[in-house]
Length: 115
Image 1 (spheres, rainbow, N blue to C red):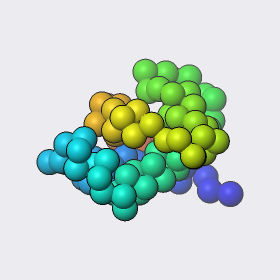
Image 2 (image 1 turned 30 degrees about the horizontal axis):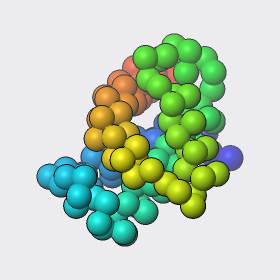
Image 3 (image 1 turned 45 degrees about the vertical axis):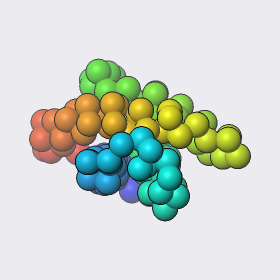
Image 4 (image 1 turned 180 degrees about the horizontal axis):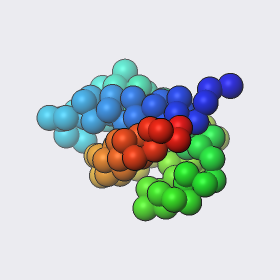
């Protein structure tokens, strides 16, 4: 099983991917690009799953990051795959992800000696 830092780096990589892939596009571009929206959904699933694996002590220390929100979104995307709300996905990708990226980068910097 990956270590704590590996889970956090997985989150960081997926956040960065989402930021890069959604930069310069709008919702219409996103929703009509099937490959892209499937990739973003998968990245959010990975972020949610990895968030569940980060130890409680880290999640508590950095409770400004919506760990439960990402985990809950993952559950919705996995368990309701037949009716994905792409507006919800877009909002998470463009509103929540950039904020989360700042926090994850900070966690990696501040906790590098402990992780």
